[in-house]
Length: 67
Image 1 (cartoon, rainbow, N blue to C red):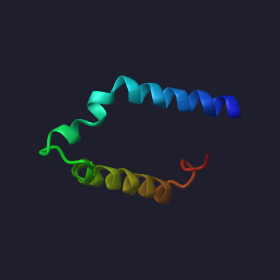
Image 2 (cartoon, helix red, strand yellow):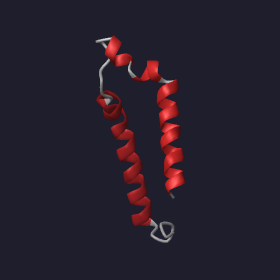
Image 3 (cartoon, rainbow, N blue to C red):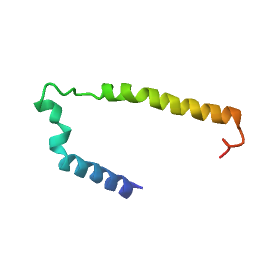
């Protein structure tokens, strides 16, 4: 368990090292926002639609929703 955690931490560290210039692009360019709220707002309608489809499937056909 501990070994898997260490391996996962090292993977994340490697990703950060390999993409350092991309991770902090917003520091160099003031026109780039430091957060991704715009992207989240753009995706929200799609996510909500997916949830409603799942709710409708489970409500209309409860046998399909059993795992």
